[in-house]
Length: 468
Image (cartoon, rainbow, N blue to C red):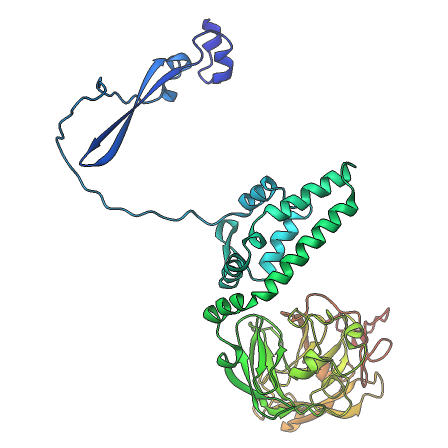
């Protein structure tokens, strides 16, 4: 047997198959006794057969010897100690633990289980925190308590597991699918009717946990319908709430919102707000709350590649930098300068970027830095005769003006004017939109085939920002 143990790290399985002493045995003894009306116990452990641990002593089990007691024996108490402690709740479920429980109860498939977990996270029922653990939110907890109060079956896995089981039997041809559908429809119809009849219980729980919108937020901008101030609710999803009209207007997410110079939209008379992302190269743009939620121009979502009616999603709605209104001083038509060299968007003047003036694309994250330190930069009504881009007017600082003879005022095209062209720089910043849109540029000097667009196959550096 010597050759079997020449390697000190022979596994237990190998040793146990080599000789009869491979498996070690332990005798576990439990002694119950009472003292002062309380029940206590102690456990002893004695090794009966060392087995493989005779040659691998570091894996041996520690013995706990107990005296030989007899049933009914009286034992004197030599010492009494009092220890204080408290119980603790189990930790929150991790994603893997939740998946195991869903599989155990027959809920979902390998393809649908991740979708279910993602849905409860997106709906803010849970939050994924450290260790990929799913921590219920106040909303999720209140919802579950409401279901339990009205009909506990709605939050138990039994019904869903039963339906999944019936679907499996249908796939095997053992059950008629018509009968399964009829049974499920009848069951859910009855539960829905019962739930509606007792919806007041759910309302009571939510009223106890959440304050009404009318009592939340701070006054920010005026509603264009009732000319009363709307309240800004900063918690996600960020939104404006008009208590008089009882309407909610969603805003872009994950940024700061403030009133924009008390200016009003010429289309609906809603006061504009300014949305800003965080960071030095992040975008800032004004928007009308009503136009953002209800774009007034047909096909605006398809035209600019936005996400359509999902108001709270990134890229949803129509901010002022996408508005094609011809007379609004904040629209893309009046603030746009030229076509974006990276996509089909338009480079728009950032009205609040002073003193670090810049242009930004209304679709992608392209940024163009204009001469810093200028006193004022504004778009004009004139267009470049060569590329049809909008001319900009720059009022330089007297101390830092690059113009000859101390002049400070200059008007020109950032693409064709060599002096301006040398003072601008292109870079990429933090974008509000997820990806590049597929719309068309609009207005003067913008759009595919006009302005400087994508640059095409032209090699002239003035024809594109790519050569900056």
